[in-house]
Length: 393
Image (cartoon, rainbow, N blue to C red; front, side, top):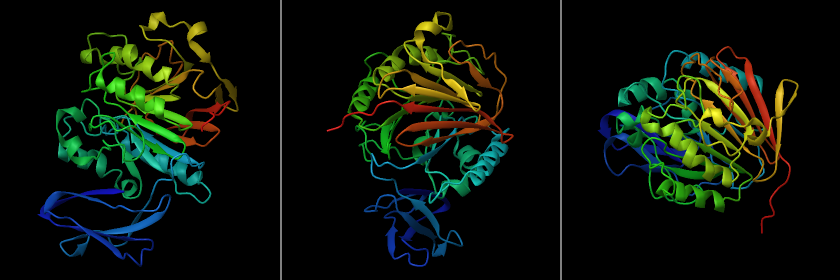
C-alpha cells in the first residue's frame, strides 16, 4: 500500500503501522525531506486491515489511527464493491453526489465487509487547469475522509493534461506490481483485484492508432488475464450525445472517433465486459453490443445488440458467456455536475442529465451496477451474469 500526503514545509515524515490501532509497532521514515510525501508499506498480508498514523515534525497528523485493507489474492472469490466517479473535478454537484452515495452505502451495508473496496475515476480530477491547488481543493479535500481508507485509481483526462501535477500526485504500477502485464509507462496500466482485471488506458496523450504501443500492450494484457471479469476505464467515450457528440470528427483531435475505430475492436476481441468513460458530463449506457465502430447512423440494432436485457423489478438483466456476447459501454462524467444532452445516440438507450455516481458489486456470478443520482434515487441499475466459466489449468 502506498500512502501519499502533502505538507507546507519540507520534512522527513514517518508512518507508523500495525494490526491494531493501539500497537503501531512498525515504522517507515522517508529518506529525503519533501513537501510531496510518499511511503510504500511492503510485506503486508492480503485482505487484512492495517492501522496507520503519520508523524510530521514529531507530531501526529491525525488524532486517531486511520486504516486500510489490503487487496485479496487475485482470483479469490469474494464480493468486490467499486465506487465510480466521473469527472469529479467539477464542483456544482460534487457534494450532493458524494453525500447521496455515502447515504446509500449506509443503507446497504455488506456483511463483514467495509463500505467499499476501490475507487475508480474517469479522469478530470481538477478543473479547469489541473493545478496543485485545484487538485487539493476540488478532489483531495472533498473526499479526504474516504481516501484515507480506500485506494483510488484515477484515469487521465484532458483537464489533468494541462499540468504535470497529476503524475506528481498519483502512483501508477508500471511493472505489473498488482497483476496484469507490465506496461513500463505511467500512461496506462492494469491490475487485478479479487476476480476482476481492471485496465486504465490513456485516451488523451497515448497514440490511439491501430497497432500502437498502447493497443498492442492492452491486447496482450487482456489475452493473459485469467480473471472472471475484465473492466476497462479511460476518459474519452466512444459513444455519447451528452455534453459532446462522439460523431464530431474535428473535436478534441478526433479522439472519440479514434477510440471507437481503433480501441474498441481490441477490447471486444478480448471479451471485455464493461467499458467506462467520462468527458461528457452526463450518464449514458448501452446494452451488450458489439462491432459498432462507425458513426451513429451506422448502428444496426438487430446485428450489433447482442443482448438488450430483460427488465425485472426495475433492473436490466443481461446474460453473456465467458468472453463472448458483447460489451457494455457506460459514460460517466456526471459526478461533479450533470448537463442536459440530446441523448439520441442509438447505441445508448439509457441516459440522464442528473449528476451522480456508480457502485459496482462484483462476484463470481454477476456484475451489478447502480447509478445513484444526486437526489439519492437509483436512476439505472443492471446486472450482467456470466453463463459459463473458463476452464483454467
